[in-house]
Amino acid sequence: MAKFLLIFRESKENRAKPSPEEMQALQEAWYTWMQKYSSAIVGGDGLKPSGRLVKAGIVTDGPYAEAKEVIASFSMIQADNMEAAVAIARECPVCEGHPAIEIRELAGYA
Image (cartoon, rainbow, N blue to C red):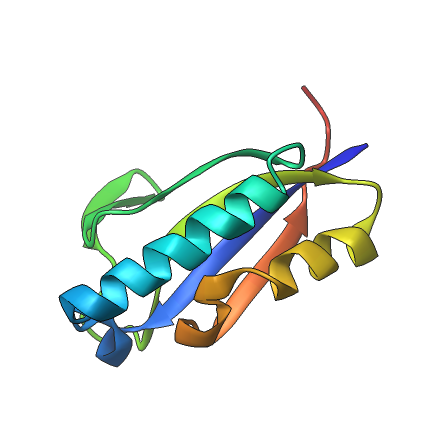
């Protein structure tokens, strides 16, 4: 069984706050998805809107103001192969609010 990282990317324009009703509906759909795939989901969380970037020893604030897309959250899943991971990601209810969900298999070095 391989592990995959689902990276939920979101445009800055889509980061608007949903209404309480929309948030409740999204949470219910999210919990239903999580329950359905509870044996496959290893972990995940949302990300705060700011952080730091270390590049060539220089530390800067990030994500950058000029970025059109940010990483909003992530989930770690396990699946038999990439096709199975894609099938799980396609059913994720937050897919509709994100322009992209990047799926990356972990290298398994550890």
